[in-house]
Amino acid sequence: MFSEGNVSSYEALTDEELLSASIAHPKAFEIIVRRYQAAFLRKAQAILHDGRDAQDVVADTFVKIYYNASKFTPQPGAQFSSWAYRILTNSALSRYRARSSRERVELPLDPVLADEYAEVDLMSERQSLTESVRATLARLPDHFSRILTYFYLEGRPQREIARLEGLSLAAVKTRIHRAKREFRKVAVYEFPLLTS
Image (cartoon, rainbow, N blue to C red; front, side, top):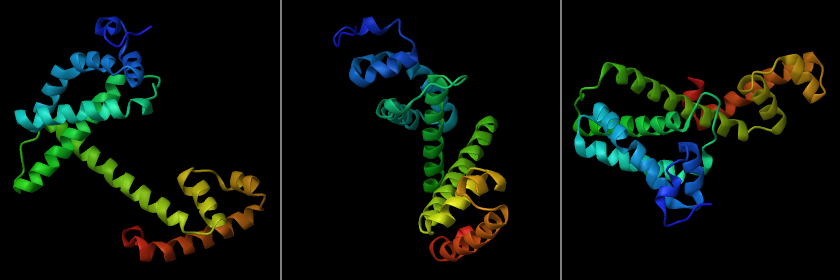
C-alpha cells in the first residue's frame, strides 16, 4: 500500500494513520512534521520567548513522537494532536525550568501557561511519589504489597479484597494495618519523604 519513496501517497491519511505507518515507513513521518512544525514552533515560542530554544524543543518533540509512535494508542476524545501537544508542552516547560534555574532569574511566562507549568510540576511530583511508593511496595512481602496495592493504589473496597484474597473482612483490616506498619518501616529508610 505504501511506497517508501512516494511521500504524496501518505497525504490523505489521518495523523493517527501516519504515525502508525511511520513505524514501518519513516517517510510517512515527514507529513506529520509538515502538518505540525509551524504550530509547534508558535506554541514553543509562546512558552520560551526564545527562537533558538523553541526550535530545539520542536526538534526534540518530533524525535520523542517518532520514537514513541508504537506507544500511542488512540483514546475516545483524545486524538494524536492532544498527545503530540502534551509532549511539546512538557518539553518546552522542562526547557523553561532548566533555563530559569541556570540563569537564576524568573523568566516571563504567559499566565495561561503558568497554570500548565504548575500542573506539569504537580504531575512530575506525583509520578515521582508513585514510583517511590511502588519501589517500597516491591520490598514488602507479597501479601502486604498486594493488600496495600488493592486498597490504596486500586481503591478497592475491603469486602472485595476479602473476596479476592479468600479472607474474612476482619483479617483484611488486620492485614492492611500490619502492612501499613511494615510499609512505614521500609519507607523511612529508603524514602524519608514518604513518611514525613
